[in-house]
Length: 262
Image (cartoon, helix red, strand yellow):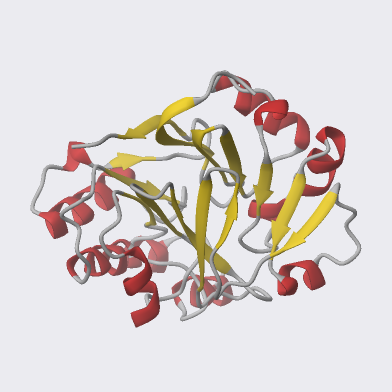
């Protein structure tokens, strides 16, 4: 592992329907949340952050959909990295061979090295999907994606975070007019699908966002949304300017963002 990092920070390797992965680090621990690209592509994208697979202590997987799972088996075995996942995700991918399997409950916190993880269940059409809040005892990063709607428990979990990676998958009008077949449109907009810009913005008005240092648009659809629409919706919810809201895209992700003491 490279030199220990004094502040908690995170970066996205890519975000969208073609692949998702996020790196979070603090002190001597570095975790990869989801692994939705091929093993070779994961290595290439890590190198953009000046990382190698040897720098990763563990993979933590939110659910089994291919855009979050694609590289898990080969990447974990090639680099001997343990994989943390829910029992439901393990059952959904029972034929995949992993380097080492560690199970976590979406209802119970756990720790990996210097980082604490607070998983929580979300309504999504997967076997046992979870999202995560990651903390170091001082700062908290909320990760909220692949969710059809925000339950009271979801709002409680992401309340008062210092950073939030928030799904803004689609604009309802663009989705309705877009190229997807009707069945897929219903799935995306349904209660087990994905958040729209307006749903994400509404969530922000229902939580304590006063501690937010970083707000990131994630899992934005390339067919049914535009970055400026998502930024405008979230900025309006927080009474701030659109340029304060970062966008993680499919090809480049998002470079390192640090959470600093104020």
